[in-house]
Image 1 (cartoon, rainbow, N blue to C red):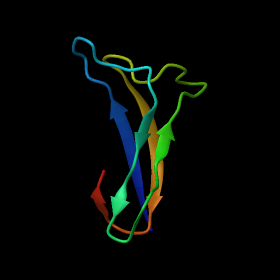
Image 2: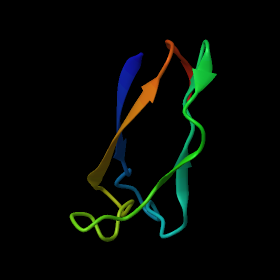
Image 3: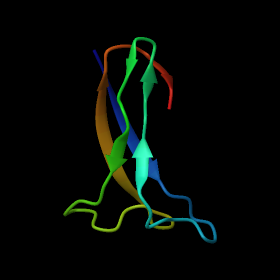
Image 4: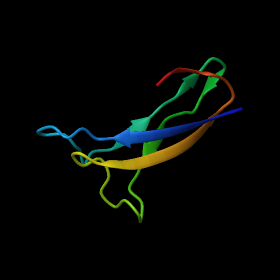
Length: 68
């Protein structure tokens, strides 16, 4: 089993950021994480805004990472 720490940094350029649903999917050599929704939390009620580094998640895969 391999732990992957994913951090999302939203760029600081004009029109960067979103209020839409954001998902992540990690594919390994022997399986995948499934689609994981990156949701707002109490600490980060409005994630994915321009110029912010505000979202981290830990995902567990049974193999090495192949693609995101």
